[in-house]
View 1 (cartoon, rainbow over the protein chains, first blue to last red):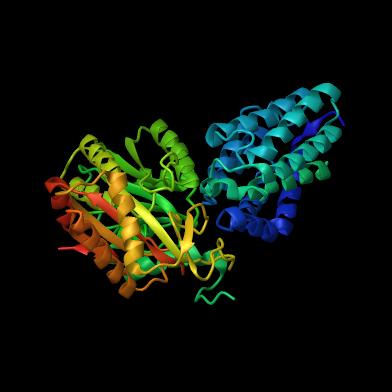
View 2: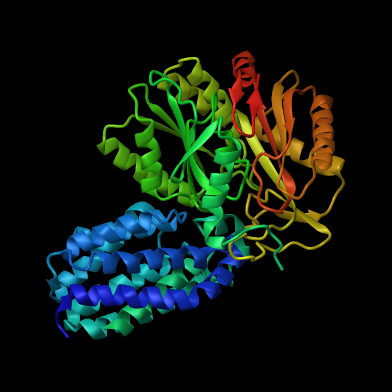
Length: 208
Length: 328
């Protein structure tokens, strides 16, 4: 496929919400090792809000839809997840060129969301955060889209990059969040936030 | 198995806020996720706004009221509110005199505050922020989190705001307090997360952890369980070093139980700490031994100290009237 539509975007987010609903207990358990054990609760609540927002606002143009999702996500009051995912969805809005995007526009759309996320997160690769899955996934997506123009194949490659990135967080000491103070003791534990993004990107690929 | 008197785990925050505003309806009122003063102060005075997760009662909502916080934006259990909730708090007390926003140094609070301040600035709302970082960490290179020491800022800056001090004066006062206070936590038993029932962290039966922070996230120094005196002296010694206290200095000393540690133990800890400070020529001129910032059934306490001068002492003694702290 060579066109990415607003309906693809909605389907992807709905699938992601469905997958997170299945995984949220395991995500909280993962978080208990290095955080306060509620990441699954928060990301599940947040993705439910995403799901509700895309259903409610399905008729809006893509740029307004992403803004509606951002607002609903931030209203979840879910600690750092609220501003992080809020700025991710606001980022999409900056590059929503229309309701149908070609490969280059799709790459720019997801890159803009990552830029929004980075603006508030400031986390770099290796800091043991969501960024460790989100950034390689987005960069792989954009590179594959520009190289092949194949949207489905590019999302599949991106999902693999997210999974690899999440796995690698086991090797890292945390620089942000509640795991920050654990030092070397965080090594061996996979970051719950990065793991959520692994599931989300897997759902993105599956939904197409 | 978790034995807590709750209803639906999803409604914990909403129900506890409702309960607080019903029990203390003369002092506080609820507007969505905002706990507000029942008797708002006049608009020519600086407003004090703060944000934070719940499940730490009486912190932070319990200190909304005359002479302390004007509006507290609540998130969810141990989770910061999102930017729109905090923005609505800032909009609610928007005034020419300005707003002091007190943010405790935790990732979610810091990010929400940053976004809310950007949004407030676009709306022309005048906000100065103080980020509290008073926690003592095992090494000096690590930045401290904001623990119960925020109480000093709410109390003292709240009193200064009542007296009609300007936003610039109150911000300078908050910065002074942040640089002259220190908090160190000791953990003896782990908390459970009330929404998931999960136990936070690991700690042996015969162990305690100092520099433990608030949520059982680890990262402190684990050592064998010790007596009150041994523990209090260890913590007090670290406060003396951090603040560079010397003979003749005066402090406000607070022992705030984390939830499971009893008032009896808090009082013994206060005695032991105050006597240790006294032995170094440092006088605890005011004090508290009561729950300040709890973490469900976590055992242990936070020891908080603020180095005071006459100005800070006078403001500490000024009247206030909130659900969980009242003077005069």
